[in-house]
Image (tube, rainbow, N blue to C red; front, side):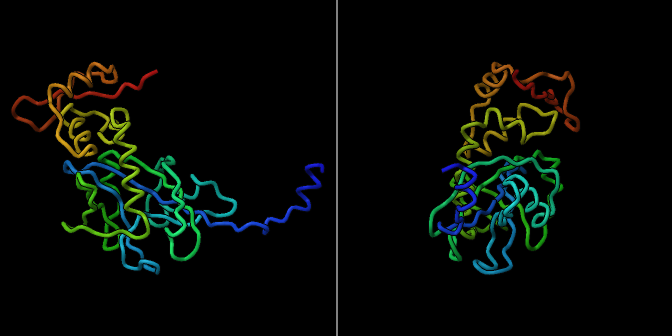
Length: 229
């Protein structure tokens, strides 16, 4: 059978079609702690629970466009670069129907993180070393499987932190700030001399010759990231 003829007679209702959503994991580091953006659900299921900003993908919409739209509508954020992390498709992950979620992540530098709107229904939750999600000093249980989505996103970030850490520091940063980001993501302290030696030997840093302001005693030199290639 020729393909045009086949397509003309094809019945798209012959197979069940799951719905697709995007869930966005926005991560940053503030006060030495890894943070994630959460919004409070206003409707069932899980009404009142904290969740990742997410929503359904339109039939004529790309996944990236859906993630960008969701962040604008639900989180009040624009011009956020997102990338896909993983697909989550457990059959019981959503009590409404079969829904497959495509997780996207964004890494926010301190200046961008400071512009994230925060109010009663939106917060920057902190993530403990053991993976616990903390809001106002207490552990919270997230809606759906969003805790699993965050955990996998962080696990992948940990494997690439030597490169991805530069998205979580200011444009000009000290080695102390860079180490602080690594420690926040990895959830453990690092040996200072060994860390600095390893970072400098990788060839991804360039000293600016400038020093941090506001320190009366031995201000640290500022560096910039030099992308490879």
